[in-house]
Image 1 (cartoon, rainbow, N blue to C red):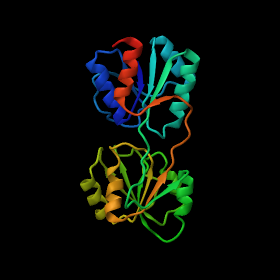
Image 2: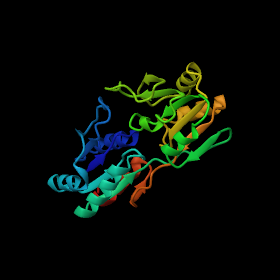
Image 3: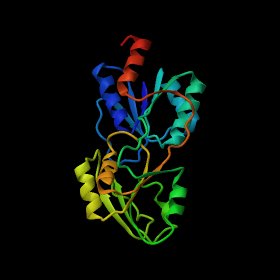
Length: 244
């Protein structure tokens, strides 16, 4: 089995596979300098597109490809779908459900980050930009705001935003931590990707308690694939296939 990982769900699946002594590799994209240790073999870095991934699947006799990447990692999901088709490998996507608003939430759904940046035109605000580091440059058109950015690792170059406060911390986070964070920085708006899952949801419950608006970026479209939401479901499918 090859797990395309980087998520909490991928780590949980690795633990389940190790508990049954399955032959599996967990692959990281390499965007975090110090990924969590895992009970199965790991690798770091890209494959060289869909063709490179297909070559890896053939060379390592992979029978099951598990796409457990972040919901916004659209390119690797595209590559996984193409590589699985090229090699006849069974592809299963492990995808956490998107967040849904509840009572007291003040959410606004936006199609993409470019729309969010356009909507920030206007007077200065204090914005918790919870989108990771790769797309911060999308907001350079709105330099008037005070941005709060939280990253797992210190950046190796200056962030592209002129007025930015950087917090270095590794999740999962809890509501008390994120309440303190939002109060300390006097944030009045949260912009986040609708990643789903429990590990990053604390900021949403903190926003609810403080009455803060949240702009949620919709997930990108992904190729069709057999999809489950729980690592245990993967194990059930493997049991049906392999009897393990």
